[in-house]
Amino acid sequence: SLVDKANYRHFMAKEIHEQPEVVGHTLARYIDMASERVMLPVTLPFDFKDIQRVSITACGTANLAGYVAKYWFERLARIPVEIDIASEFRYREAPLRKGDLAIFISQSGETADTLAALRYAKGEGAHTLSVVNVPTSTIARESETVLQTLAGPEIGVASTKAFTCQLMVLASLAVAAGKTRGELSDEDETKLVHGLVEIPRLMAAALTIEPQIEKLARDISKSKDVLYLGRGTSYPLALEGALKLKEISYIHAEGYAAGELKHGPIALIDENMPVVVIAPHDRVFEKTVSNMQEVAARGGNIILMTDAKGAAEATIESLVTIVLPDMAATFTPMVYAVPVQLLAYHTAVVMGTDVDQPRNLAKSVTVE
Ligand code: G6P
Image: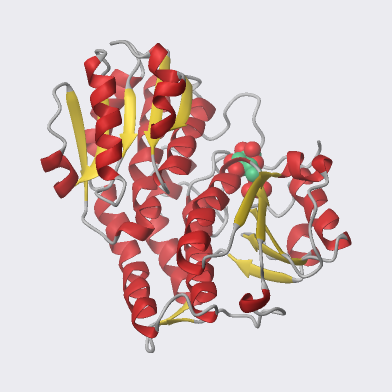
């Protein structure tokens, strides 16, 4: 067949491992390597200088890519961004002004709620831009602007490589927006582009920790509940970690903003609920460490995903540390997605579930 599992046991494993390559292809479509500038393959029908707000709408994992992008657009381009679940956006009839930018993210380009949200935004006179993996899809056809992800066919129901390719497109777009709006200098752009160019290599490095994750998955598989915590762009990634785990291993998991811990989930902490903390050594690292201490003080078992600097600074007992490569803080979600996906994958393998076709889930939800 056109798409096979190669030497992998599941499509999902193959797709996780393909990421350095397909994220690299996507990068090459959006970055001009010679000039080290972001170069979109299409001319935008609007000027980012005129955009006062952006609304991002999607479902599932694509929605979480949009959530990461919110942080990027706000930080790099200083544009306020609203992130919405498509089924909420469409029925809430979120007010849009003529000339606002509405972004839709979808692997398949056929998700019913996302399509309906796109049609609604068009009706309101917003500029519509979609980030899609299938260029012939309905969402692509009906959008004013299409930015394609070059993930290739994704077969596993739980999205992996489409997610990281969506992040690459959205990161490039956020840098372009920041540049146009005068929020980023040439020098800033060069630095950020250098950061993006490094991503495929860093993702490949992150894949080498698979044996450690595999071992960890055996412990996770004994749990009934898992909590994922993160701050900043690691917050939506915590949501994605929890989503992936429940989708394919059927273990209950929740993602939480680390700062919200004491407003609820701290009540659940005991030695039976592993807490996965996603915390690269970025500007909010120390804040996350103090949340980790709160977990440790209540007997919680922590799995910390961080870098060498973070591992050296987070001196907490009963801690398993997964050390990822050092990198520019802005784009960590693309690299930290790898251990998050691997942990869900290997846990599901231990549980013996149907990883590529998890019960009750569909690859593309084309009916409401
Ligand atoms: C389903 C899939 C998810 C996917 C979501 C959105 O729930 O199981 O993996 O993230 O749909 O799909 P889309 O094709 O719009 O990205």
